[in-house]
Length: 88
Image 1 (cartoon, rainbow, N blue to C red):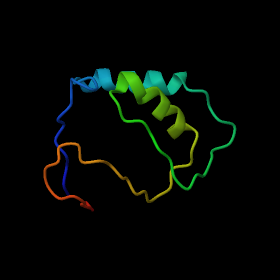
Image 2 (cartoon, one colour):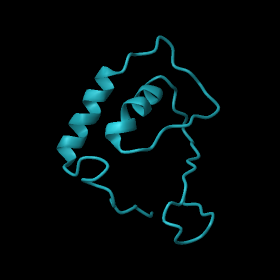
Image 3 (cartoon, rainbow, N blue to C red):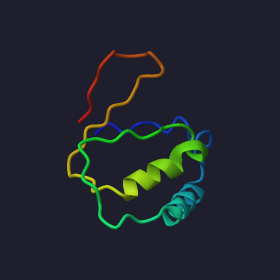
């Protein structure tokens, strides 16, 4: 299995694992709980630095039922490599 290198650790999110986990747990607690989980066909989450977008993403993820299989579409910001690729 391919495991992506942590290129932005310490820049867009905390580099220390304990600090990151604590930050995410705090955000999870701040998000209001939905009465009933939604089952969307798709979602679009912001993906800026965590301090700008993580609370919005956490709120969305907390309110949906995450299926067993997902398709993650992401841009290729670097321009390196293939135009379109897939990973198992």
